[in-house]
Figure 1 (cartoon, rainbow, N blue to C red):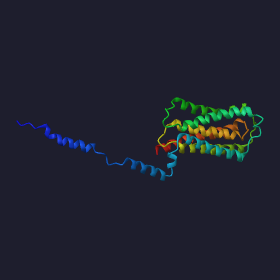
Figure 2: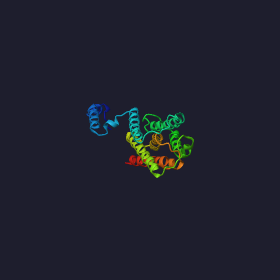
Figure 3: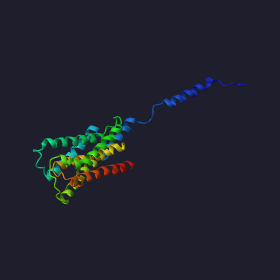
Figure 4: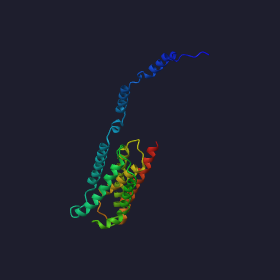
Length: 235
């Protein structure tokens, strides 16, 4: 019986090794340059390159500008100086939850998942929103029911400021992130920042007005953030 000499296969094996060991024909640098050029031509290319800090600053700037414009249009309440301390405590509580919600909604991709406390913050924001008609009794102001016109006015501006806030946060959220707690945080931020700016103007503490003009549209803002956010993520 004739046996083949294994040494005869060595040249063939060497050819196979050389073939697989050859440098690839793909120019990685050229590919990366093409990707960067495509991003630069894209209308949202600049947005994709924003860091987390830049996204938060941009969101804060846009929402602050819109809220300030609304307050300038409506005018400041007349008892800000007289009851400055009590009002400052309420403002600090609202803004504290708002900034925490904005940071959570635009949480960095590399940051560890926040866990249950993300939903806890959202529930705390909703609790503040629902309790506002009763908490208003402890704040300075007028407990007068001035009719549906004033309620509709606050309702409309709450939807405006809250809607702008939610829209900005959803646009600035990275498209690959779809956790529901990000959407809940965006909605809570929109509802409570609206309440803050409205309190700079509105001194009505009547429970009916607070519920119809501040809390109800705030709940609408949260619902819109969740529904629209989930629909966008599905697309």
